Length: 170
Image (cartoon, rainbow, N blue to C red; front, top):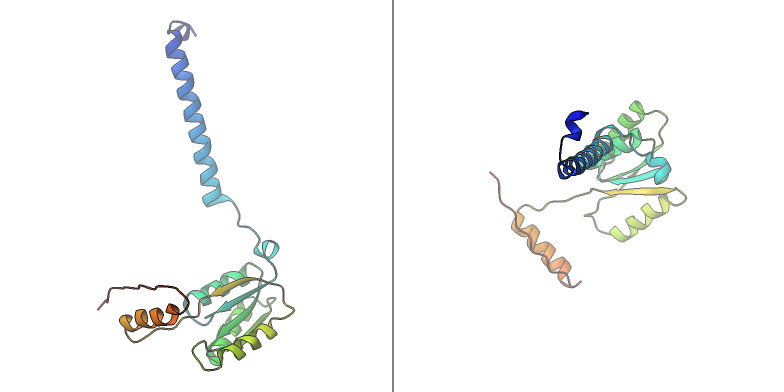
């Protein structure tokens, strides 16, 4: 205590400010660490609703999202173009999560008559409390330059200028 009283007032004031800044920074770091790593996730079913619609659900991101949503307690409407793959993914999900309700709908976004098929999808989800849509259905073109040309032509009449470039890997 004698060592503190021997210090000049300006040094004590500066030490107090430094202690306050350090304490505040430490508290903010602790709150960030809690929020980023320790805090439990929000219950999706309570935050959004009971159902999630996932397009492109047979492979890749769509499939992974379907498994995450069903693990979080949501029911699923899986949309894909391959009935066999949809049945396999649906069976796998039901095996891991027997309480989940899983419905499937076959829809190829590149086929003719897309508007009628989307209307049929809308009718099939009528009455479901859908709160999440993951649209990960994709298609590719043989070459990247064709992809960018197709997008530019497709959206030009909508007033959207698309410029797309990608590097070609091996």
